[in-house]
Length: 69
Image 1 (spheres, rainbow, N blue to C red):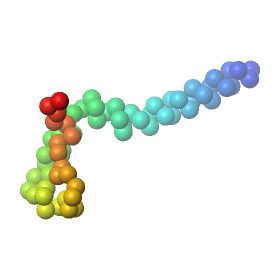
Image 2: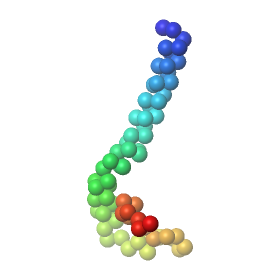
Image 3: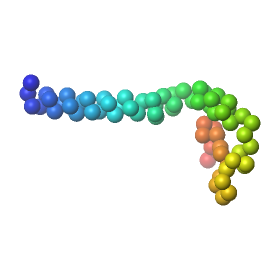
Image 4: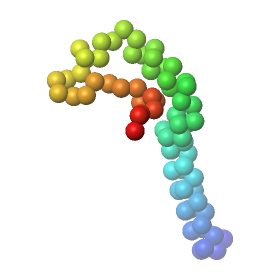
């Protein structure tokens, strides 16, 4: 195997590994918003947000709700 082919395979493997690591962390949640929104509704049911937030911090907001900007 030539030196250039080995370098391309090593670099390609690294890029593939990074892409495989980012998919479940970044891309899957972005493409499945409804699933994550439903899970958060279940997880946050019955929680009074003001009671669990430390003093001086903003109260939780829905990360999937579009902002009015």
